[in-house]
Image (cartoon, rainbow, N blue to C red; front, side, top):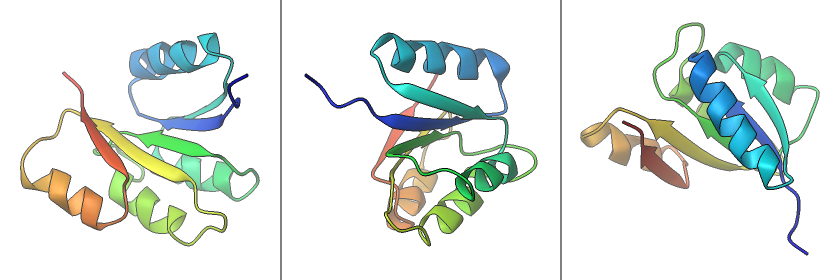
Length: 105
């Protein structure tokens, strides 16, 4: 049996939140959503997650600011970006501690 993960999905696009959360939930994972980096930080103060999937550019707390906060947590959750951003920003995200960067279209 596969481990059921606690996943936090962070995006300011409601359709993307719905699509991603339904996808992970259909695989049996426990999903929480946040509409911004700042909302995610408040959630993380109360609850631990195995995985975080975050957009990069958001109002009210961007993904890099969220990653900076996440890097202070113990245990450290796996952090991935899923964003339409491309170019040098990908390297910056990986250097900041993200495990991966998925380019969304």
